[in-house]
Image (tube, rainbow, N blue to C red; front, side):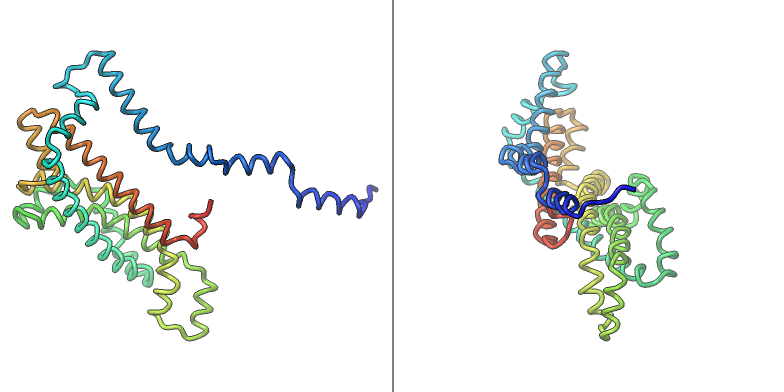
Length: 286
């Protein structure tokens, strides 16, 4: 029978504790300044590379400007009248923000009820699923007929498309709190309010921020679609609709570019807030 030498066991444990030199080199390389710089520039490199391929394809395949303008021409069109895009972007951003906020508040109310009551979850969840699987464009005209033209139908459409991600992720997050912590809180006679704000809500924050990143794009979609149907005279959706009606290709693509920029900026803002708020969470550790 093979016997284990205590000294060899001690030596091997020391080797494991010290770590392999190559492993240490790998760890240092992962956190090297060059690697950090590349990770920081990766999104910029990806976007610039995509636009470069687009620009090159226009030249190689000789695509006409009225069919598909080049990124350089689109940026030139935006530069020729920047205030036009600023005004319309301001309108769409405001509509998206209001709809996003309304959806979040209503979803948190519903998620709290569903997280505390199985009956409420079974009653509400089918309605949420129906709302999610039904395309917004199918009932957008009905919302306009119901609410009339103006801001109200836009806010309703925007809130509807953002509601379900917040609701589902909210329920998941509120229920993901450690049961041992709940038992501990109840053992010291913590109130329901203290249990919610000190345990359930912090536990739900990672899921809610994930839903927020999804809902940003949905809020812009809801606002633009609402501007299409609600008779709006401002906003990037109105700009796209007008450009399509009058064959203004540069204005159409300029509005799309601005929408993409607004969505990317809003997503980065939420990611920044997430990193600041969830410094304690394992998802934010390197």
